[in-house]
Image 1 (tube, one colour):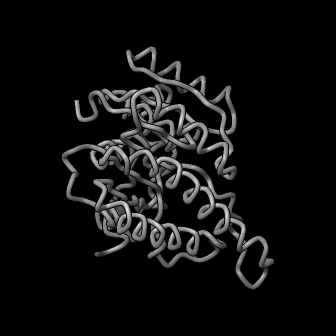
Image 2 (cartoon, one colour):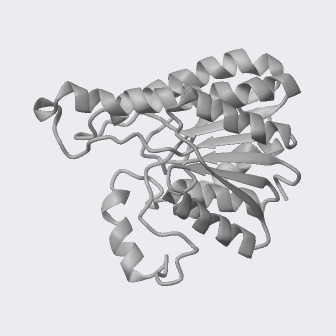
Length: 254
């Protein structure tokens, strides 16, 4: 297993991407700590993981509260260290409104939240990782696309990429890798949804509009995003840092 004996914290573990990543990490042998705002949702994810034979722990933490994030990281580190951190928290953006009709406060909110949350998370886990001489910090980011009516999301994602580069430069000498994942979005299904066939007509209809501009003509399912996150967190990716992991199917060309 790729992450055997590792300890991972997944922030935003109650969401679609976060829960898929948490399941993948557990499947690959990691002891997974699920962090989010709604305990009931986190417990549901934890039950799935335990049912499949994995280990999961739940904590309700406000990622905008640096003291709370640090306290939780201290507890996890004291129980055996932190090897992996994945940030899948939402940025509360406003989409669908053109910039000409958007208030500046609405535009800035996702930028402020995204940077604040990831700074708090990276600093909290980074203190422990740099002392141990190893660790991986990952986040969903990007910002190189040109898509209208996404509000402050582009700026938020670009800011996260810049923050990751600086974190990688400062944490790298201590054995800690920092990267970000760039996805074109997912069609709204995953392989654990038994009531929808990802190869069936409903999935095809849902995916078709979003595949415009993709050379691969395929949007990654949440499970596929999670598999990439598992690889990025593993020793197989030990030379990847300060880098964007681009799986946009050619929508963003490197």
